Length: 162
Length: 401
Image (cartoon, rainbow over all chains, first blue to last red; front, side):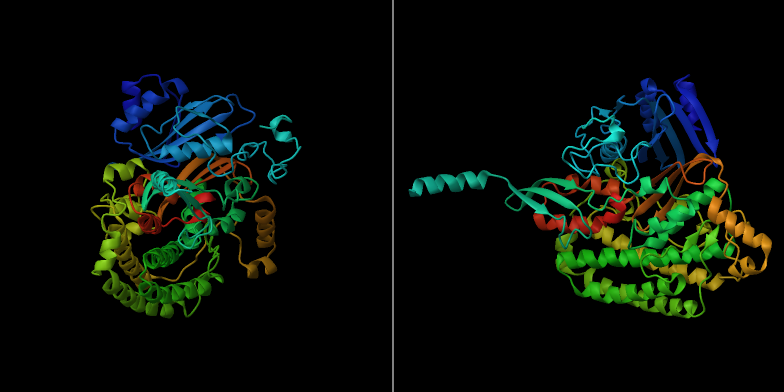
């Protein structure tokens, strides 16, 4: 339903869509993202349930930032995905949805996707000088060298520290 | 040093902020988390939560485990009500597979989930009261929690790390003797909840410590991503068991308690009433529990019984194939949410068709709630921070994953 509204009011913004097992998914380019979010907010999707990312190392652009919205009035759910390249920043939603604050910090921490305009973009689950981003597919499962602080070169970070 | 300079130093010190570390190991943090509080006298000017002390990398580990193997990891998310995490996760995988589990399995899942909800609310309410200084309610309630854990142990073999569900059903049926003990639990727990209410609900000290503390408007609560009892206490009647029923919750008769102000007292009242409603649901499940299978009849999903594995070739092959190669999963992504004791527990699964999930995301209900901690306690007294933290029911295992 809301997808039709997006189509009507912001034609051409949805680059891909699918429904699997009743889950509605739309894919939106980064440039149109904020406009779509504002529309969703107006349409009653006011609970940002979840914000996460998925890493596709072989794909270009590499990441999908995944948002899950819930409309409390109609109980409609919507998944919105935005593809972003490695190192590319997403616009923050912390201004519209306060809950995005920590979710974005978590995505920044575990995937290394920065968020433009975030009020306090620090790592959330790991510590400040942690090397690498654990949920990237090329981060080793055993944690690699992250626990030796002196003189180790982390292979998953092109041999560079920091 | 002259008196003058001592006076000056005192003045400077008085104007200074005091930094107090609450945690990572503090009796009221209930789990390992740290809050850096900036105080002016007793008043909190800023609270900075620090988390990650219990970060195990569950989501990363899940990517190298098969779908079945991930179940024990879900026990350790919200360890006060682990069965609800088992149920939430397996529901997500079943949604991905597009299967429905047998009626009896659904009913037992509901039964165990509601038992877990009661146990979880007992911990939350009891411990919140202890933190504020009311010890007796905690003791009365914890006796019932032990019975609930005895029931878990009977059914699953474990008190805390239950791993009770399987994809397509359950690990096993509930044993003989479970239903009589559950019936007794219903009566005794109801009485204990009443007793707890008599101790707290009209207690003026409890009112002083909880009313108006941590109050939040419904709009703010939604904006902060609140779900569960904390959202309902703020006046939003959102409960996934009613709003988006799963496991046949639409067939049970129960009410959704809603608060008005969202403060610690309302959260307490909502949890107390939810315990009663959960007991009501358990009563209905026990009344209409019919015999039947507890696993789907599909050898590509559920393991065949041991008896068959030892006597029939086909079953042996299915057993071997399931263990060694795992299930055949469709390519796709699902988000499945269940109403856990703390709120909406979501699992977002991305499958590339392989034996292991490509990505598992756990949406912990208490992370968005804890996110608002600074907002909730700013301007409050130090002792109120303890009350707010207890009423949020932060479980570090779930928070940090």
